[in-house]
Length: 449
Image (tube, rainbow, N blue to C red; front, side):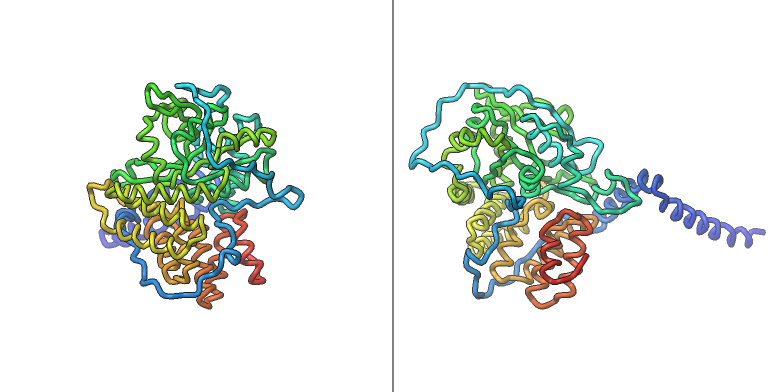
C-alpha cells in the first residue's frame, strides 16, 4: 500500500500541475493571474542575478569614418512625425542677443489643473502626466486615450488592454511629442538644459511644465533603486523654496510641494529635460518666455555647459549622471565621437559606484537611449550590441525594450548579420505596433513583420 502511495502522489502532483497550466491559458484566469506570475518570475530573476551588479564595459574606440551631420537623421529622442498636410513648423521668433526676464511674483499656483493618477494601470506615468498637460488646455481625452497610442502593448488577444501594456516599461519623450502633434490640435516645445528660473518663468506666464526626473524607491529586494518619472509642475513658492507639482504616482500626489534642491537633484538625471504644451495661438507668448531656450541648439549647448560644470563638483552617482548628461548633450549636438567618449567615462564611474551611492541606476537605458546613438554613429557596433544585451537580459525581467532591440538590430545590420537584425526589428513592432522606427527598418529591408 505504501509503495502505491509513492506512485500515486507524484502522478497526482503532475496532473494538478497540468490542470493549472491549462486553466492559466483561459483569458479570464490569465488576465487575473498573469501579473502575479510575472511578479514572481521577476523576483526570482532579480534574486538570482541582481540587476545592479551588471556592469557595461565599453570596448576600445577605433578610428572610423564618421558620417557628416547631413547624413544623420534627427535624434530619435525628440523626433516629430508630422502628417503630410501639416506644416513642418511655425517660424520661431528671432531671438535677441540678450534676454531680460520680466520680474515674477514671489508665488504662483496655476488654477484649472485636473489631477490624473497612474494607479490601476502598468507603467502609466507618461500617459497620466501627458493627460494632465493636455487637460489643462481643455483637451477632453483620458489617460487611456493617450496610452492606446503611445503604449498599445503586445497585441495578445488573450490579454485585455491593461495587461497588454504591462510589458511597455516607459513612454519616451518623443512618443509624447508625436502624440501631441498627430493626435491633438496643440503644440509642444521640448528642450534640454532647463533651470528652475525658467520653470518659474513659464508658470508665471500661465504655462505649466512637464519635466522628466529620477527618484528612488525600494525595489523587489528591499534595496533603494533609481527609477525614471515624469512630473507635472504647476506652481512655485519662493518664500518656502518649493515647487508645486502633480505627482501621478505618489499618494497623495495632488498639489505636492517639493523643495527646490530635491526637485533639481531628480531633474539632473535626465539632463534637465522639460516639455511645454500650449495652444497654437499662444506660441509667441511661449517663445517670449523661453527666451534663448527657443533655439534648440542654444539649449543643447547650455545643457552641455551645465554638465561640464557639474562634472567639476559632483561625486558618486551625481558624477555619473553629469557625465551621462554630457554624452546626451553631445548627441543632441550631433557630436557623436565626443558623446561616445563621455559615455565611456560615465560607464566607468558607474562600475565604481558602491553601497554609499544607494544603488547603481540600472534602469537608465530603459528611459534614455543616447549611448546607442553615440556608439552607433562612432562605428562602435559591438558596443551597441553589448550594451543592448546587458540592458535586455541583465537589467529587466523580460527583454521588452523596443528601443534597445531596435538599436541592436541596427548594429547587427551594420556588421552584416541581416537575419538577426530583421528578428530584432520584428520584435520591436510585436512589442509596440506603433513603433515607427521598427516598421521603417522592416520596410527598408523589404520584409514584413
